[in-house]
Image 1 (cartoon, one colour):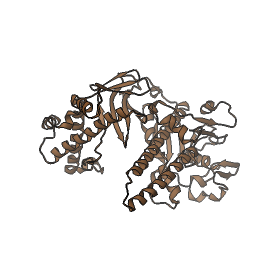
Image 2: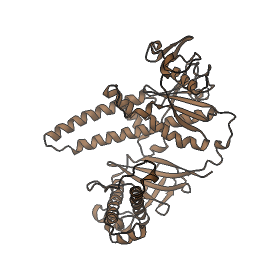
Image 3: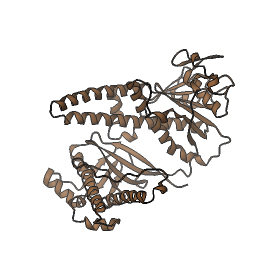
Image 4: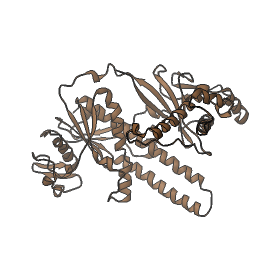
Length: 459
């Protein structure tokens, strides 16, 4: 089986001023070189060839400021983007309805762009990464900032294997930076070679408070991934953003300086993005663990998340919260995480699943839709007793698949909480630091009959 690629992300939130200056110059010159190359291509002063483009720009200051191989990668990316757009203009039918936009110039004031180092430009020693710098850049740093530096050393806090690392990317995020480490994963000896005895399904109902409710065919205990901690954090950040936006608008109307407030808003949105990304990865890892433990071959997720960007009757705050919750990201991450194990991830139609009694052998249609039995927000009255409303919906998913299961979901639900505390400071002290990619947030699994929280995953 071919080797798969994975990305390990490290947020450099505590980078020193010296590191920020060097990283800023690298991403700045990457964007400027991209603009120069794109201009030559659009004005037809250079051929669609990386070597011709490099020869035309070899006297450029921004090209000299980059390591030679990283500069070539920037030029190659520019050519591929421009060539792809030209092919779309000439033969749109080959793209099967997908639109390819014309490459655009980076902004003049903030042209910062991702820069890629391949194996010729970096070395790894323990937890540290050594990035090569050009002579021109080292000379400029010495003259302008009195920084005498031969290489840029970045401490990741995580022991890395240089043989597995394919490339290292420097990604600008406002005034901060992230290091993306692309590495190989060999699944040749993993569990995907094991043949499952029969097709077994996992069904997932996406919600807000109960972020995802998981039911596994033949397993008595349903699993509820709690989303209240995430919602609390999002509310705090959204309130701060709303306050700062109001302050920014007042300053703007009065003709006063508001760039500082704009930077604070941008930083908060960056925190939200990192939080959602981490939460989605953690949830997808839990789902993968459950799927492997119970020998699942198919995962079905409710298709309500496909309609997030469509108009709804929900209030603005509820609609914004529903739109921000990363259900789609979880499915996206699951696709590549379960692929080596031959597990299929698909959407399933969830119409009428919340209002049909799952204990009866009836079809999940409008004819049997009885939403009045949902006495409370999270409680559904069946003919045999009360059942968690979301678990009832998950059981109806199996019915739609033609797998009526009298066992699944009828035992005590296992509630999985991703955060021990919803304190913003304690959360970001763990996931936002130098080695963010290697830190696992505490996961709390609560079950009324289980003393050991981690044993709940094996029920």
